[in-house]
Image (cartoon, rainbow, N blue to C red; front, side, top):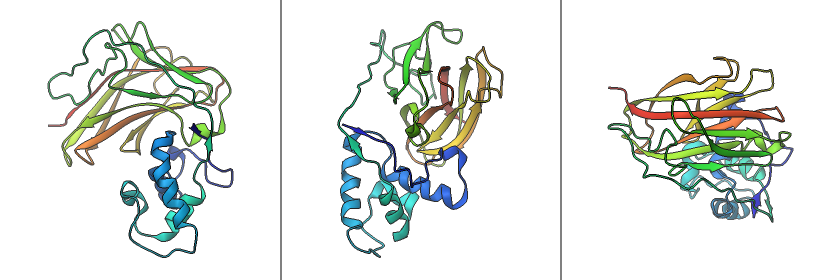
Length: 257
């Protein structure tokens, strides 16, 4: 099975393009339905079916994964549940290159296999319709880099659930970190798009195809404070082009001090 796009009546803007009350509503929706995985979808869909069966004013008993983004306001849960995606009957599995070595990390670096030299793991790739990923060679002064490709027209669900690659990190909550990585865009056009960075599903940074110039790898630095000991680092790829190539390489997360 595969989760389809959100209803057209709901806000389907990218999280990097909304603000204020819209951001709060969007964050609640994404917290309830964070991935296109049916396994992750089912339990919160069941909660929504019960919660919206009547006019509900309860302020407790919400799914734990959503409480930080949704709070205790019943209206937020009702709104998010009304915009939940639906399930279709097909799933196109994605495959990853077989690792050729054992992933490791430099001292103090929380990212394992940040240079993609040992295949994909422990990174996890999420492709959507008309996108694909591969480990391309050469990388940024190395053998490999992670490559996202847009291979057809952008589909509506891309705004809410874009193609992505992510890794769960073990950090120390409350400690500041430097996230460093290199990016590559094949061209600079109005519709080429950008790479967005999320920390525990909250957007913290974007780099546009034209920000640093196309055709070569460029440096990126993001400073953030770890929100939890287990922190999800996620790169999302958004473009309006029917054909585009983005790359990331040499990803590291180290304590600021």
